[in-house]
Length: 65
Length: 255
Image 1: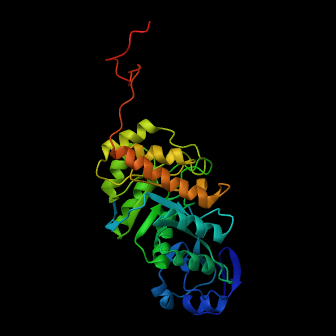
Image 2 (image 1 turned 45 degrees about the horizontal axis):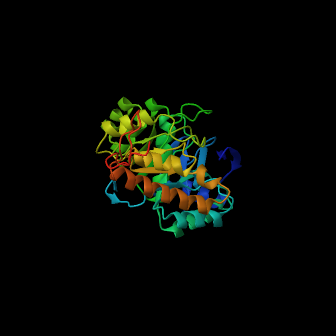
Image 3 (image 1 turned 180 degrees about the vertical axis):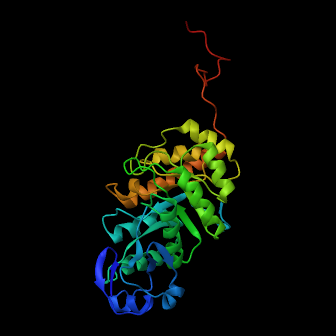
């Protein structure tokens, strides 16, 4: 199915958020996720399923003021 | 001083952005002896670019204060705070809800709304706010135990634009830790904040964009220390007229 990852269209086969992150190469433990604007905790990624046209945001630590 | 149950001795909170290199950032933070540094969340790449920065931050041993910089609505800020807690493992959040893209003025209505939701969810909120007393009261009522009024617009380096309003805020909230967040440009500005009785200063650009960030970080720390000692030493009040400091008694008649 096709989803949007950090604004980029991506094709995935993953059944849930955890496997999708691995499939897309986001393997760092220091990431946080939101699906369609709603926060998904790391502990809930295994049970979070994705649907066509979902919007996934993957964030990581960055410099900030 | 005590921030949400954590004892903090340094009155300098430092941002981590805009440094010319990671090595300069590390030097500046170590030289300033700051105990709290701010960080943000931005989009990750599959190459794991956030990892390198995160490893540097962890090595510094400072308390992490994640921010919600760039959020323009309460909901955006709430979601960002939740994501920050998931990564950084802290309930601290520097809550920014921005009203204008050009002035970066806080949207205090969205700020109060987000602060209430986050405090109820166990967050310990450091709100970036204005010097408005009523807004401060509502933030405290929402669960904030710290207030962070701006001194001037973010990154402007103008110093304390409204010292009278900041003095009034200090008087109105005698028991709430007050931190000047944004607008500091020079050590004298930081010192002035402490002379007004503020507990700390949060700054980024003034150090990161200085010609010698490590030296400026030390200068800021020294100025904050001097300002704090001066405030505690109970300074004199200004007068309109001159008052001779040398005694008149015993002056020779040489006219």
